[in-house]
Amino acid sequence: MLNLKEKIDYFEKYLEKKDNSYYDKMKDEIYLHFFELYGNKNDTDGFLFLNEMQTKKDIEQYTDFLISKMIMNEHISGLDDIIYEYGY
Image 1 (cartoon, rainbow, N blue to C red):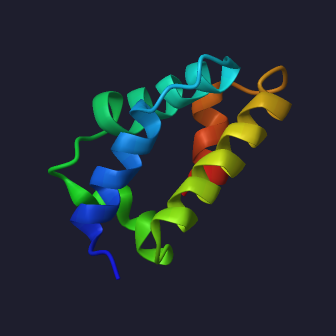
Image 2: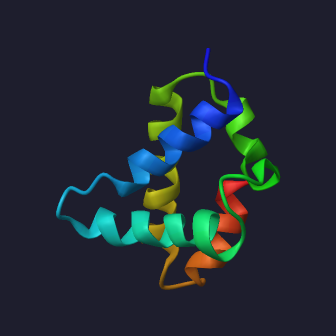
């Protein structure tokens, strides 16, 4: 099982992985939110939601779910609002 630090590191690496698609822009928004605007990986309080996930696959599925919600709702709400609603 991954500890919180390992989960944060994997979450960051997964967001940095690019596929040359619209998903990349959404990953950039999530990265900006979690790692630049509202915290950093040394302050784990902003990443406690990762404790609910047990595997790297769980983190990938969470991220993909969040991206799908962002794409489906970006015309209704700001991306930060969507991240707060579905991300925490």
